[in-house]
Image (cartoon, rainbow, N blue to C red):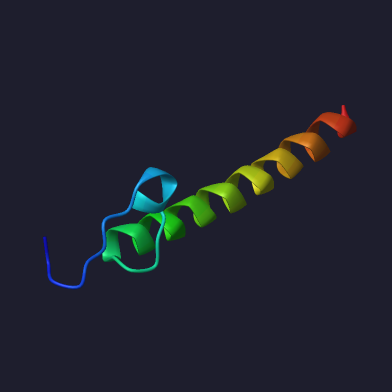
Length: 50
C-alpha cells in the first residue's frame, strides 16, 4: 500500500477522490448516468410521435 493511502470500505473503496481509480469510477458513473438520461428522453420522445 502506498504511503498516505487510506483503506476504504464499501462504496468509498470504488468511488472516492483520493485515488485515481476512485476518480475514474466517479467520472465513468457520471457519464453513464448522463447517457442513460439522454437515452430515456430520446426513447420517450420517439414513442410519443407514433
